[in-house]
Amino acid sequence: MLSWNRRTKWIVGLAAIAAYFALAEWSARSFVDLTPKGEVVIQLFRPFEVHGNVAFSNHAGTDRLLAFADDEEAGDAGSSPVVIYENNKALGPAHSSYADIRDQGMGRFSFWRRFGLVFTASDNSDPNTNGRYYWAVLPNPSVDMPPRGKVVIRLVPPFEMHGNVAVSNSYAANKLRDFADDENVRFDSRSPVVIYENNVRLGPAHNTYEIIRDYGTGRFTFWRSSGFVFTASDNSDPNTNGRSYWAVLPQ
Image 1: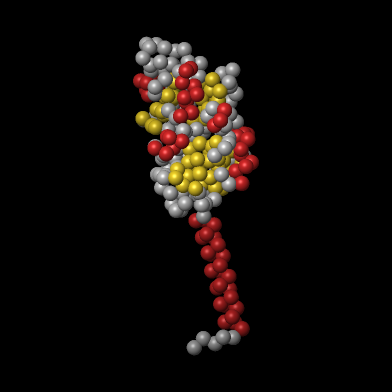
Image 2: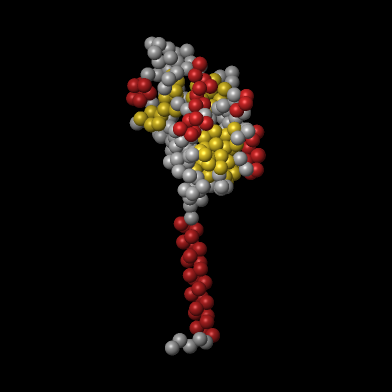
């Protein structure tokens, strides 16, 4: 039988301390911080008001982002830099119409001055019960400064990928549609719209799909019906390479 003397107490105490530090070390190594990075990062807390698969978040915590929201009454759709994250993955396309958010979902969202953050989960599940975390993020300007232009629209993943070719045809692109090349007109190259990767201009522009696919390295085009078709500067996947992409109508 174990004698509960002073020496035994010391042994048990030391074992408990060792177990505590072992557990703390394991917790530190196994912990995954899902908080995205940005100048302003606001966690969106439940409960969300849900209509079908569409969630609304308009609580007081997002008031500090209202200056960066799209103004739906002024037809200002496409200028907000705010991004919604699900855990540590950016949702999108951003600047989607309510009809697209409701009917297509899969992460589409908008941030409106009046209605707040309107979004869907990446798989159209209920964000109140799917166990994931949601965040509203204003990107860090020192890392993620938008380029300058008359109209600047952030192209938000997920992008539809075909090999190394990315396609972005979000609702936000409608604001620039009148400035797009018409693919039904041979050799049309009138579009002044430029794509930026972070703060570096991509190009050449006005390429055929085959040239974009075969040569890549930043080649792109902007077509009226297909939207933005482009490659990253190093042919990496723009969904996962950590860079920001912008469509810019120069001043």
